Figure 1 (spheres, rainbow, N blue to C red):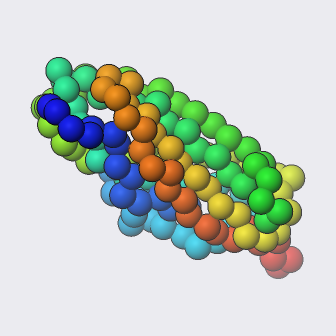
Figure 2: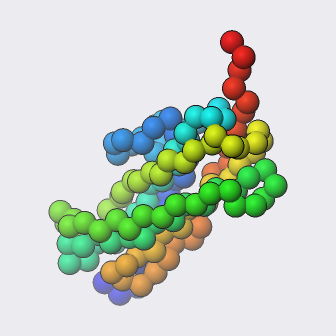
Length: 134
């Protein structure tokens, strides 16, 4: 294919869990409790060539002060069932044990490892709250 084949991020969300396709959107949350793990999940379009789906994925989380508090990355390399544009999802889980309460931002960036292109960064903002004393 000629033209831009950079991955296109459609959605990024804090989710209750990410196990199956659809969870990145259907299980979206606006807040989580400090001390519990959080999962950031994203849905994206990717152009598969030669039956190869190979994407470098990076998720960074920034705290209330704007500083990065954590980061993870993953290299997704698999054989795809068909060539052309497809929609995929992935998620990463982070600990919040030492987090401060406040508003956080997660940023996702994807790079196509078979073609040439990097997605536009996509973000989600969410709140981490103190556990309730019940």
